[in-house]
Length: 214
Image (cartoon, rainbow, N blue to C red):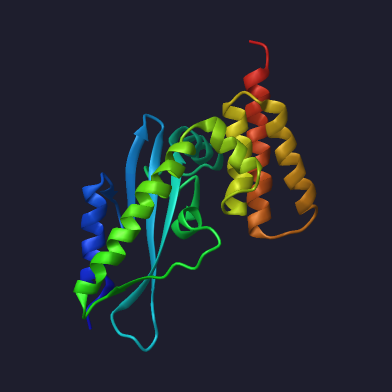
């Protein structure tokens, strides 16, 4: 059995991504520099199909990562800043390139010659839809709007939206976003909700400190 790491189709796709400027990171994560504060982010999600050895069903995910936002969030949560994980926001490539349509990108181990057209289509979709999305999301203002609109993964957004607003000096909006989430959580108890309460308390303190007279 050939592992996914050595799958000829996946290897060819990695090479194609390098050819359009993406840098391979750990696992199947790729990034591309957008500006001093933003990375374009691409994850090669895939699944093996039962009963068809060597077939990979590809579901690439495109996004952007705002480094100042992620660094601030890591500091607030007492965590170590990671250079490229996770994306600040991401969407499936097929949703960006062909919304409302079913797109099947399948790579085969035993018939690698059939992979060329699939790889070419994935790369074309990245260039025509994925990269423009990354560039659009590369500013803190645009990212904050998307986060507040609930785009991307919701539980990621509820942490990142108030931080983005704070960095934009929109403190009242940041406080309002946290209060809305805290109201929704109410008195429910679990680890995730406790994390949010701790996060909100820390960010509220940071906001208060930033506006206090010196």
